[in-house]
Length: 298
Image 1 (cartoon, rainbow, N blue to C red):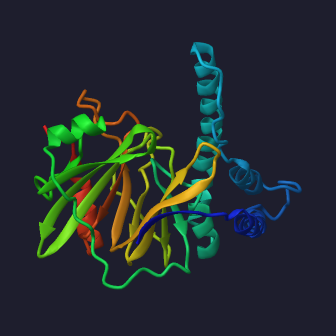
Image 2 (cartoon, one colour):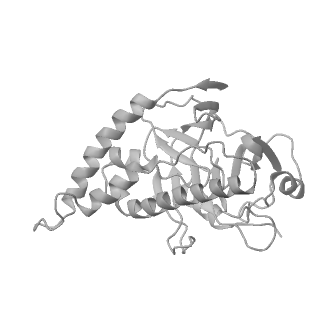
Image 3 (cartoon, rainbow, N blue to C red):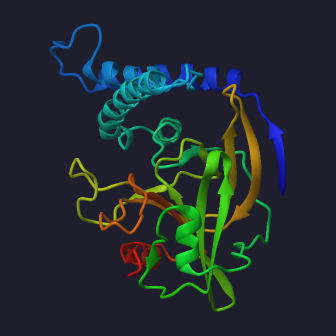
């Protein structure tokens, strides 16, 4: 199903956020020692409270010129740094929360251009198939159009089709497709600098995995999410007034979602890395093996 529709979910968000605050505070108190040395507010409460409070503002128009752009950059950097610090602390507690709470917290831990949401009411259409890539380009042409080199899993070999799709504000997504036993395997790559939300609504919690190694700058493996069942996939956009609307919606099969930091070899990989989405592989083990072999073609 495709289309464009507006959505107002402020009231629902406020109700969920209030319930989440209470559950997180209760969880935080349970982490304190029996002597009560933490006082009226626990360390976990303070950390989680900052996570709940941190919501990046939508950029507003600034005066033209170098000074105006510098002010915008400084403001964005300060806001993003606070959110990154809060997220790093909060991730230490997410896995210990109960599934309903963890599901809501996951909503706020977007990485790259991806934001993951849990929606138990979402029911995918039966019999949906992974979409193909359409008319193909060469890898070189895809790189020129998208501004970054496509990442190709060695385990799958050269893709049978490569496409580049435009996104708002001059951004692009690169899609690679393979045919295997009558079905399509598709890998979408989003530049990590994307600010739009790429929202997933699934019937159950994704499984948190790791590709092994220490991929992030902090020495902590980047998150890998496995969605075992079919799910509803929505692309969300934000207009100049900060309002969200639905760009498109379709149903897909099992999906692996993870970040890749690219290569600092001058081949044009997005500076902040890319977010990758692999679908069409039913086996979790095989999907992980494919993800481990992703590299920039030489």
